[in-house]
Length: 196
Image (cartoon, rainbow, N blue to C red):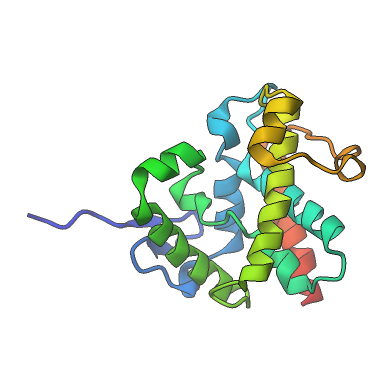
């Protein structure tokens, strides 16, 4: 019996092996394009456009910068890329990840390591930085839940934690076409790479 195909051809022409990804096969344009078409919340959001993982990633990096203005540029880049593997494996809501089990985490870890190395980051991010990125990610999830996913503030507070009003009061989710989300992601990536 032939082994199942475990690679995907990217628009850049790269062939990404999902079981053994290498940094050489990672291109930011492929990541940005893929993330711009992956919907958060399984697409269950209000508006004419899905809220993409690309938009979410840009927002998480912005929140990370606001929360931790003294962190080095490389960790801002890590915040921007925190969901980058989803350009090939999609965005699964937490209950689905839990149902799949450790195999999902292993695949995510391999892709994350290749992506990080490709852009000059360590394969594994220090735990303290991962926690800070996760905090920014939860702030973003709270904003998304309350602004576009139909959750009440009470429900969002239970799921994602009560948020600092001074932090979230001026942050607004703006849905836009995938091409604009893709361009915002690649532009922020280019800015950060130029500062490294």
